[in-house]
Image (tube, rainbow, N blue to C red; front, side, top):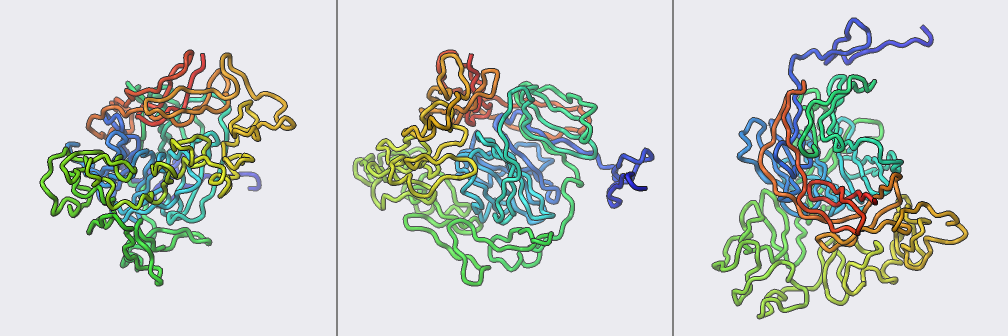
Length: 535
């Protein structure tokens, strides 16, 4: 009848109940919640139903691991071990057999095979503080979040195409609960809450029947429902002959819906004219690992006592070691750290740490002009001088390239600052162009003892933090403050979705030094502090 409605269920998986509104699963498979117990630094996890494996990111040892689900937990295999300084969310593509993950330090979205081989950076621009990620291989898209001063929810093709911000928003207050992760099965939504320190559930449509399944000692992290309905079967154009690709075959969204196969090359490879074949493109002064990972590592990582190539080739034909593992052994048998390489200083005493140096920085790094130091490319023209000579903030460099129109304000001197820092009462540009009198007539906010933007103290890592505009009730958002990771323990557990679970989630030992009158409310797993309570 006109104006009426009828509820329908997916007849392949569900039956409609007699009430006409509820869909009930046809299977009798019990869903389980996967959480982390004792793994104080496991911030993200996912599973692969086909191989019955769990994948998780550990920010304590800065690695991504995998393990068999029913294993005792004593063995897990590291699969991603480098360029992992700020691991955040990860997600398994159970159709295309790939692993996707986000890194806040690198500001990257990366992909690899499920064993960690053929790693490729899909996105290296437009991300500031990426956090959560979820893949939908049925439509070929990845959905993710970024929680900087101007947070957004975005999507991008699983091949790295069509990067779009779906929803951009600013914080309106600090009175909402802090949901870290969520998952859903049937008509129930489950989430982990940092304010409550609990695992909670509720009806996914009405929000009714809210119940705390279990309180946790520390803030709980990621949560997943382990059930076949969470990983449905979709067409896989990469299934036959790897889609005709020599290395990576990624699912790509089609304009008319569905997915197609897209060939891609790992980092340090280049594509031949056929668009399907990849060949090595290792730069000079690197060591090329053989199969199965086929990656390039810095020359100083060879013979350092730590095996980084899966074929072990970086530790073959090496002289006897007198230095501890991980240190560079000079020709005169002195020992020094990797930070001493190619820094224009003879740290070894025989200059062997300055040999084979072009004094060029790796890709995505910026070279300071006077001292030759390399810093993250993203630190260039960010308003803070990270080079001791200040060349990363020089006018001739920062005037080139422009600012992100969606999230940044372009200063007249060429610097880029967060949009929210414009008209906040503070000279962030350095030339006052973000505080023009004819536009900034009213102060945004004021907190006793703090003018304009709140200022955090220096962290234990000697990094000056910056805070954004007040969120009300005296709260302010802070920028990056590195703090040392907490110690980690050992076990990933699965628990029934009926609430009979036990969890002890992690907290961090480290905290930045703050100005007087401030209380630290930083994130618990060694990641940057993002909240400062001004009292």
